[in-house]
Amino acid sequence: MNDSSTATDRLVSVVVPCLNEVDNVPIMAAKLDEVLVGLCGSREHFEIIFVDDGSTDGTSQVLDELEDNHPAVAVVSFRRNFGKAAALHAGFERAQGDLVVTIDGDLQDDPKEIPSLLAKLDEGYDVVSGWKRDRKDPWTKKLPSKVFNLTLRSFSGIPLHDYNCGLKAYRREAVDELNLYGELHRYIPVLLHYEGFRVAEVPVKHHPRRFGQSKYGLERFTRGFLDMLTVILLTRYATRPLHAFGGVGLIVSAAGTGVLIYLTVLKLAYGIALGDRPLLLLGILMVLVGIQLVSTGLLGEMLARSQHARRGAYQVVERRQSPSERALQTLRL
Ligand code: UDP
Ligand code: MG
Image 1 (cartoon, rainbow, N blue to C red):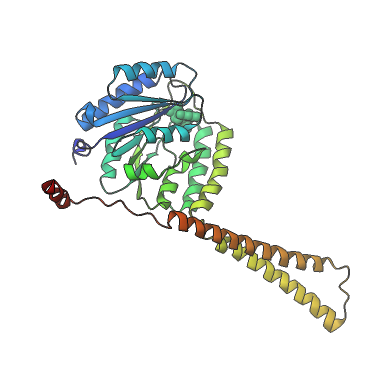
Image 2 (cartoon, protein in one colour):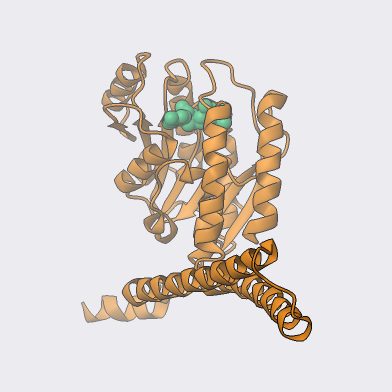
């Protein structure tokens, strides 16, 4: 398939989050421009949105210059560092494109991969995520990210290899559904999958960092892992709180009731005193905890239902006009 045919009549927006990437952004802008002119034909068909996430190394001055001299470049600047998720969100709000691409501003992702991501979108997917099959980072980053990806793969129900690649392509509708903050950018494929969007993955080239430093250390990773629990609970299990809590609650209270029946039999049949038996306390506790869990599940179920009543329990695909409908409309005009 000819890649240049995939995007010619549509506007492509590329969003680039940047925190202290002063040496990288000019090279990035030039590389993106070259690839996008080749792909879209002219600068009217694409825009490059750099989001400066509170840089302190002169990135914002370099970006201002780029914006002044380059018709396709726009810049969004944060007053302080709000994090990559916020930077992406701001870029999405600013983007006008029918197709939106994100790419890290540190030159580790390769702009030359953009056509292959867009070609995959055209196969009928809503989101295409890069897969850094041969990731060029130190093992101290690769190992935790492997654990992260394996865990997410087991629990999210979406079989990707690399959930958090900076290089991704989206249809407009998918971008509009994303509300990113904190460390949520790591879970974009999971969040969108549960909104009903079709997610795919393509292998992409990855380069070592030449200029500047990685912003992700152990502390941010720990925060990211804690978010994982929330994301999984809020997506996969969100509509089933009664099942999750209620099931455990029922088992616990049934076991507690068993203990109490056993003690009652001992007392009635054999006259054994129950006064200072720890088992009695355990039995009562288990019944109470079980009841608590079941009620928590019930509350969760009620919350989930009222949320659905407000938002709708499903997402509707925006109806696209067929060519014949469009032709009819033009005739009527
Ligand atoms: N980034 C950002 N805000 C942050 C942290 C990172 O905009 O708070 C940008 C950063 O400039 C880069 C991209 O997000 O363009 C990926 O960050 P980084 O290269 O540090 O992550 P790594 O590739 O090491 O996982
Ligand atoms: Mg990087």
